[in-house]
Image (cartoon, helix red, strand yellow):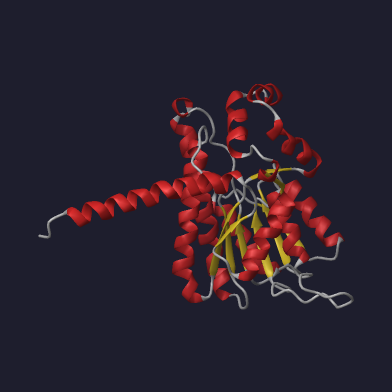
Length: 305
């Protein structure tokens, strides 16, 4: 439901409900699959003024300059979500520049993979600090400004399909993203009565457009060929487990559009793409249903006290 959605032939594009609002995106210019950049560009396309926050100041400035060249209002600021002082300064920059925050995308991730017995305590702590504490700190920093803002107000947290589908070799990452999911649910319940909703996004595998075809073709490879191509058995196993089909891989920009659509529609959850994650998630849900059924059977045979 982007700004151009629903327009008939020759009809003017409808004005997005987000138009004129302010969006803040952490990890908005970072390297990787490009979901942060996709969120920034899609929100700007909805007519929003955008604050691009990223650890890489130069990349954030370059993306903001790109948006301004295209006619959008944008600022950039260097932010480390594990350092609350930089978040506080970013809030003041957004307040001074735009005076509001309608959409806050707490987008952060990465790291925390390997064989369970090989992942040391410091790696677990780093993953939790970045993805869990960083998400919490981002929301806490911007929440006062959101409460002062009128119009649509929505928080977007980036979880992962890894939080929905059990798997191997990503212990810290999966645990952190599961925590982000829970945080999003808590926020939606606590802040919903104030008119501040929360959308939790579950993206599956993503790649840059220039290698998307290669990534999608890996599903046709044997385990041995995939390991030879990737070079790391653990990473190859994660790819085989999470993305064995072409539909399990998408560009960051396409995934971002699904997230923007969901926040416009006020949905709590959005799964951006993927086939394998659905199958594995439903299998887990069946095991949980079986456990509830077993509990009900036990309670039915118990003698009332």
